Amino acid sequence: MADPVIQASDLSLTFQTGDGPVHALKDVNLTVDKGDFVSFIGPSGCGKTTFLRAIAALEHPTSGTLSVNGMSADEARKARAYGYVFQAAGLYPWRTIGGNIRLPLEIMGYGRADMYDRVKNVLELVELAGFEKKYPWQLSGGMQQRASIARALAFDADLLLMDEPFGALDEIVRDRLNEELLALWARTEKTIAFVTHSIPEAVYLSTKIVVMSPRPGRITDVIDSPLPRERPLDIRDTPEFIEIAHRVRDGLRAGHGDAV
Image (cartoon, rainbow, N blue to C red; front, side, top):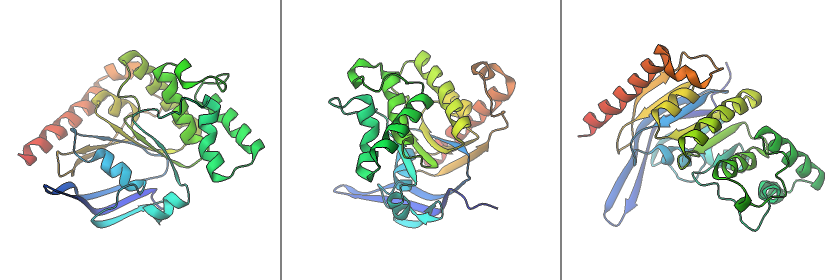
């Protein structure tokens, strides 16, 4: 059996502040296997993003263990084991789309020809071929997010961390990007950890849904989706989809009750 991509055991994380400790995560146990699409859902402040940042070694657990590709989170960061897509596209306005995507490759010391090929390939993957010389302000919000995803894919890490990348977009654009992300995941076979506040988005995208409680963030339910990997948007009207959505909603309510 292959080693898990992400393995958390009794993971807790506490921030020390001037007003006293803030317990962000408590006793989190989770395994994410290769090729999983895992969504984290819960109320604001429940630790979803904190957990993602811990995977990326941007935050450090207070207790427990966390491994990424069989390494510590710090080792995985140094090995460039993941790409990270933030809530905002975070594109530099003075750089073209191609220049933004090349930036991490330049930092990593890739050769010129290799960078050109990688930028071309990831732009095709996210359906932005032909936009390499455009500037971010010339693209819609949804296209900017696709460029941000392309930048995270450029160095071909097996793990993609996505922190509410579509949260600020309108529903029509969000639906379209959800479809595109599923198609991208199918083509690349990457492992994806995805933070969202949307129950329909979590159910539509995921092979596994992790439901979290209010702070201190705990996992109240882990739902293995029975839905097929190929999912048209109208699958959201099926009884199977609605049943999973109800279970997610029940898990969120139960977590709130435990926190009171």
